[in-house]
Length: 599
Image 1: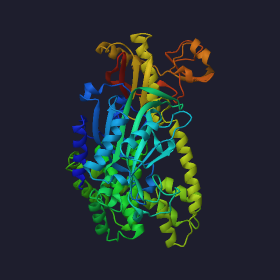
Image 2 (image 1 turned 90 degrees about the vertical axis):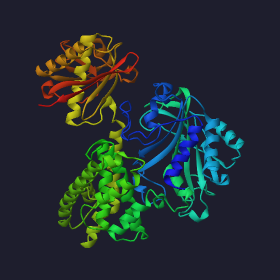
Image 3 (image 1 turned 60 degrees about the horizontal axis):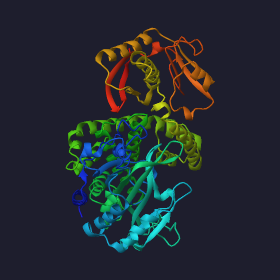
Image 4 (image 1 turned 180 degrees about the vertical axis):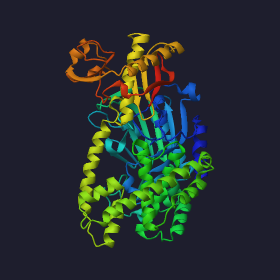
């Protein structure tokens, strides 16, 4: 079955079941969801509908929708190229219900589509369900529904395998039932990791193809679960995996959405794809460049922070492997053109943005080549490459371990691979700790720019309370390199005059070059002196308060907030404050987006 034929069959099937067909959303998560850098599942752009925050009938004309969503995941990036199914960029076919149908229909329809519409043998389908834990009961209902539909190869697993989400720090989630396909013993490539072999075994015989999530819970940042207002269905089926199975290919890389790219790279570099090491590197190049193309098309550019860093990492891994296969420059753009050619019919915007895509890819390759040259000069001087030095070369110059080892081999220098991984693990633990705190206060990073905008955010809230009244309270926040966003309680749209007064208040505070003070006080003391704070139940007995103008006890401040920081030391550092937009978010909640024009 062809790529486009499979997509058409899926969308036609669910359209006939009453689903509204929606186009793929951008890879950039919606602004209301600061918990993710990239869309990594079909449900991400639809999250407000699962939470009853938006009305699907009003927006889509239906409580049932279906999409084929482009996604990027880098959690298993090291497995890409080594297994038959792991990818960073993939397309996810999904059908969704916002309080309409639930388990009965979702299970029956998935079975109908797989067996009757695309012809998969029913006897090869194996099912996994959630076996329950101390917080959430076992999904016995799904077991009964599968059995009623003639499926008896059912296995129970823990939350690690059969409880989905949330795809971020908090959000909607629920138990899931997965459909696995038995490819047969001839596809067993590795030793079985599960006794008797079956779903979730890593041997390669079984492939998970469809995940049906019964989204009926909300998990908060403290790990607590609450029932949602409605029962939802969120399903995701990997298009590339299904293509692989339908066409009996060894891996997703031999399907029509990859094989022309693989052949092009093989011929262009003049290397043999069947060589196992070449195969892994060629697959990584094809996958990573594909992800990069779609990311750039959606407005992401390489950088050293956030999603820009993910893009840079993907590009540099691809460039690195290309350099090993063939030491020449400016090859990435040529491969990218081949990828665009494959997808331009389904995603016409790739052709429209081709010039920008190639510009960014070629710029990054040129930049990385210079960085690598600097790193190689450092490497020339070394006699021994221990773990610390190897990681220094990786983290400072961007030299991947394989390239370090290749150069070291030429000079008969030994590289401490184990030491490198120990240093890498330390780095991951530090990054993970930082990531867990990533959105404290709504900040996306602690760069100088974001710190300035964070201080301006405090001034904005003070201005709104001064001009509109004390009923104004913060209801949400997000700050990135470009702008700050403040959601606040207020019943109606602000007038042009009110917006001008708010802007003037903030700029006046900036011109006055007011000092910013940080104090640690008792929570009761902070409240007594009028410090503002949100989510009080989560505060510790001692809190940090930032005041602008003077100390908390003086009472002569223009802003006082319980906050984890960081902030500038003086408002004179900020520049010119400019409101970009004011809009409604929900009943009684307004939103302002603003920025700083630095002089």
